[in-house]
Amino acid sequence: MQDEPLKNHTSMKCGGPADFLLTPCSIESLREVIEFCSAENLPIFVMGNGTNLIVRDKGIRGVVVKLSEKFSQYTVKDNIIEAEAGIFVSKLARIALENELTGMEFAEGIPGTLGGAVTMNAGAYGGEMSDIVIRTHYLDNQNNINIIEGKQHKFGKRTSFIQQDGGIVLKSEILLKKGNKDEIKTLMESFKNQRREKQPLELPSAGSIFKRPEGFFAGKLIQDCGLRGYRIGGAEVSCKHCGFIVNADNASSADIINLIEYIQEKVKEKFGVTLQTEVKIVGEE
Image 1 (cartoon, rainbow, N blue to C red):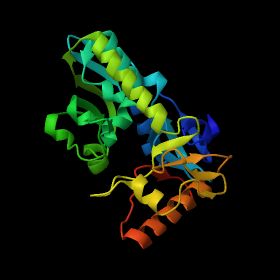
Image 2 (image 1 turned 60 degrees about the vertical axis):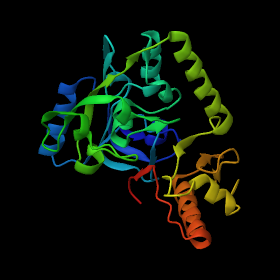
Image 3 (image 1 turned 90 degrees about the vertical axis):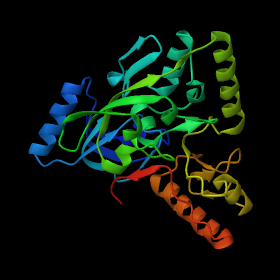
Image 4 (image 1 turned 45 degrees about the vertical axis):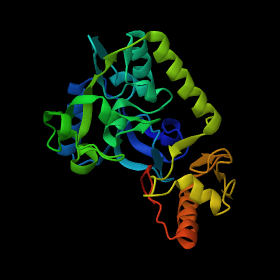
C-alpha cells in the first residue's frame, strides 16, 4: 500500500502516512523486502500491531513493514508453543488455555504482538515474557537468521537484546506448564476484569505512556501534579488511570507528544523525577 495512513495501524489512532506499507506473510518474503530496501537504499521500519507506538503527523518515509495477522502461524507440542512474531500475545494466552497450559495468564488483554512483547519484555500482573520465552529466531542487522536461548535474550525491565543490539524477532518458543483449565480460565478472567476496571479501554491509547521510575508510580506522580483529565487539543490524561494518555477527540500526534512533554515538565518541576517514555515515538517532525 502506498501513502497508507498509519493512524489506521496504531492503537492511538493518529499518525501520518507511510510511503509504502508492506505486510509479508513469511520469513522468506520479509528477508526479500529487507534485501530490496538495502539494495535501493530505502529506509525501513518494522512494526507489529502499533499498540506501543506513536507516529508523528508527517508519517514515516520509506518502507514500513507490518508483522501482524499474516505472520502469525503457531504450533503446540507438549508444553511448548512456537509462534511467529505477528501473533497477538492475548491469542497465545487463549491457545495456552485451550491446551491446559499455565504461565501465560498475565498476557490476557495485552494488545500487542509476540514480536513486540519479546522486544520490550512485556508484562503485567507479576508476569512477563522473560518468565516464559526460552528461544527466539531473529534477523540480525545483516539480514541473517540467528537463534538465541535463555539469558542471551538480555531481558530487563521493558527491554531485551533487540532493543539493545537491533534485529527483528521472527518467532519465539514459549515454555509453559501443565495446569488446570478451570483455574487458568478463572485467573485470566480476573486479569481481564482488572484491566477493564482500571484502564481506559474504551478510548484509543498506547497503553502506559511512561516507564515506572525507580521508587515511584508514574500515574501517581501525574495525578499528584493535578493533571487528571488535563488536555492538549484532543489528547487527554485519562481520568481512569493517569498513566495513560487517550485520544479523546481526534487528537493529532503533536497533541499527544506535546502532552507527554508537558507532563514530564510538571513532574520534574514538582518531584524532581524524570519520566521516560515507554512508548516509541517515530516519524518525521
